Amino acid sequence: MNREQKIFSDLKRIGLSEQEKREMQQFALNLISKDREPRRTPSLGRLILYRYAFPVLALLVVVMTSLSAAARNAQPGDFLYPYKTAVNENVRLALAITDGAKASVNTQLAEERLNEAEKMIANNKINVDTSVGIEELQQVKANFEEKTAVAKKYIQKMNSDGDISGAIVASSELETTLQAHQTILSSVASEKKAVPAATTLMDSVSFHGKQIADERQRTENRAKDHIPTLKTSPIPTVSATPNLTSTPELTQTPKQIQDSQFKDDAQNTLEKVQKMVDEITEEKYPLDQNDKSNTAQTLRANLDAIDQLITSGMQAYDYGDYSEAFLIFQQAWRLARGAELFLDAKQNLSF
Amino acid sequence: MRTDNEKFFLEIHTDLAEPVFRHCYIRVSDREKAKDLTQETFIKVWKFIQGGGEIKSVKAFVYKTANNLIIDEYRKRKTESLDELEEKGFEIVGEGAGAVTEPAEVENALKIISKLEPKYKDVLLMRFVDDLAVNEIAQIIGETENAISVKIHRGIKKVRELLKVGSNKQ
Image 1: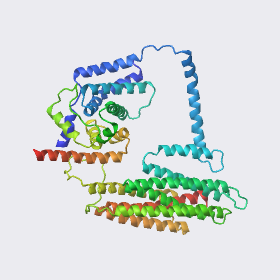
Image 2 (image 1 turned 180 degrees about the horizontal axis):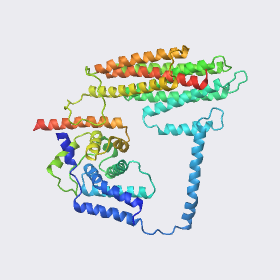
Image 3 (image 1 turned 90 degrees about the horizontal axis):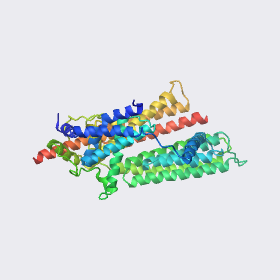
Image 4 (image 1 turned 60 degrees about the vertical axis):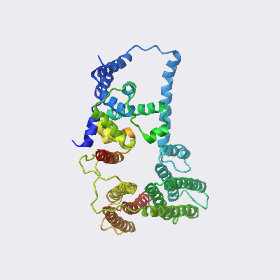
């Protein structure tokens, strides 16, 4: 037994004496026997409360749950759409605790607005000649801009709080969403009567997309300023069970601790990219060698680029430059996510 | 004739009363207070079972209940604000009024472990003293399994460093 194991083994010697054990056992027996005593007959008021409170509460829960489920797919102009934006989405926002989670949920909601606008355009629900759907589209645009602004606010907060990798992850998510939907919107809107109305939304998406890309670039420069502790050994595997017999290491410096954070982030990002690529190639768009369509060719080019980025990222990782590896894997993630969003939209909107 | 609930509760109590007491004692350093906290923990567990609550992971549930009571106990201590508690964690403050003398090895182990940062100390104690699995600790603390594994790994390194510093001084 080594010394650290002995420390914990010594602590395990803390326990109850025989007398204390008997007292504890008696306490447990008393506890359950106390609940066996006959209960007082409830008053009339309590009886009424017991009789009606539960059914009323249960009914409320059922109604709220059904409304939430029904409102989930509501579109602008639908009866349940206000419930979706005012209740369902506010619940999601309230459940996000960290700045990263808040930025992510606001990004998802901004994306939901873009999905709605694309659906309206694709289904000919907007016609500038007859003004049909124009008001709904303006409301969608206003809500999209509000959610985007809040997501940006939390990204900036993470940046100023020194959470560089968190800010990069969140800005990558928002940037990729906006850039992908800019392409999707222009593909859907072409040759539709919605073009003039959709242009202002596309301009807004483009404007915010460029802004967040600049923000992400500035944050990445901060990450690049971090000088890593380099090494040449291969990638270590992360074990859930610590090895208590391994050689003791020297105290970590703050720089090494930051290295370690980038290392974890690099590993997590790489895992996400690989999972996303697997989903694309195995489920969403299994590539056929004979498929010469534009989509297939673009996807092949993207997958090659992702492959090259993963190789470069692995080299940086092996070299111990974890911040560089993280940034390269993030670039690969943006490519994969962009492709995924485009393929989803192509399938759902048939353009 | 005991009901299923009673049998289930007594089984949990038999298995976990002493480990929960140890868990509380290491954190509050007062034997009588630790026994009170253990009993309060099992009162809550019993009420939960009686109320028809479903427990997915018994160990994680019982330890989480105990942990919440320990935090409440610290909140009651007027001399230490909650902010300081979150910053300093569960410091071992020496023998309490009802404490009995522990063997020298145990005292020494308590002293070493008290020097660890709370974020490492808590997970190491849960993993190696309470014998909780990584997923159970993750449920109790509310963090991911990966984050817990990293903390355990780093905590072990810290213990080694503390032992190394101790050896050098001697």
